Image 1 (cartoon, rainbow, N blue to C red):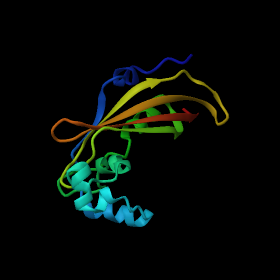
Image 2 (cartoon, one colour):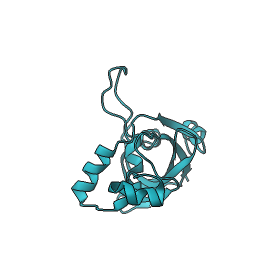
Image 3 (cartoon, rainbow, N blue to C red):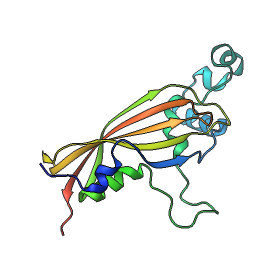
Image 4 (cartoon, one colour):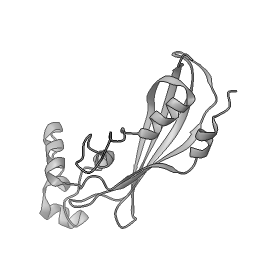
Length: 171
């Protein structure tokens, strides 16, 4: 068993990366998504029907993670934007792997988002497995939860991701 670096141990169980309400949920953006995939769900389009079911139209729930991805550039920011799932890259680098991939994704939905909402996304390292031999070489798995909250603190959802890092960086 290969031990974990102290920095990785320190990341376990707490928010390491926080994306704090970077995008506003906009109906025009979700309409473009629905048009692209031909999703005619009336809860995304029909105000009358949606009013009966959910108070007003809602954003497609599967878009939840997209509302917490920052733009590559912002006028007020100096330097590069955080990468999507930045904590994954931090773990991969700290463990000394060249490659990493997502092996499993689960999205647990709690509250729908509506136009004007935004989300705070917290990336939490849940676990890191032991190093082992895989078909891709020596590697290990780790799990990250991305917890999404609405501005009022309501839990919007949790994205659970499992990664595999492999391919040691040569010293």
